[in-house]
Length: 220
Image (cartoon, rainbow, N blue to C red; front, top):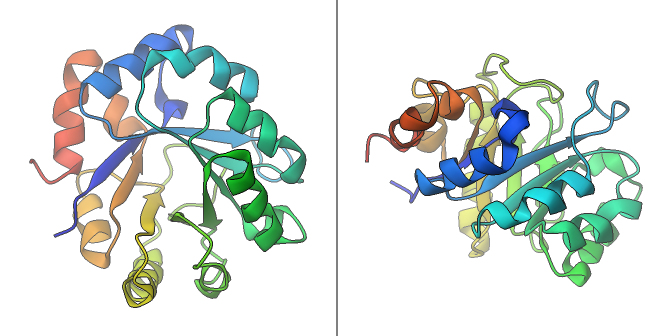
């Protein structure tokens, strides 16, 4: 069984007290803070930018795992890293030269990841597996929280786990979308070691954050 880490998605947090919410889930056992950045163009929703990221960076010292669902992505890399992103994850479809984009993220001082939409094949990540620190499998179509897990993505997770293990590299395999105590065991069994969850973490208020995170980790 892998060492499972949980990255609460702030999309489900109370934005009126976002800094405190981040501090609370960090204290409750979160391993990363997952920040979904959407531009209303690459995906059909608008969320936060680097100004918000910079404002809440002081709320915790745990890594900020920033998922950029924006296109073009390259012009914003330096700004997000300067605002406090520890990991920047991009989509192959968000720019013309994925390899160059990943190199730019590393040159800016952050770890880099590649994100795969449900219809994006695992092969898109395999082409850059030697460059990335993280592969993110989207188990819903990106844009909105609260969607139902797409079970067909389990086979993709399994394929990526085999490729990562064969590479010998310490690449994190993250899953985002419909992750809850029911789907988390299936995702972990398939090979994921980082779980992004929004409502499954934030439901119930501050006193529930710790038990919610523990439930996703299998009750440990």
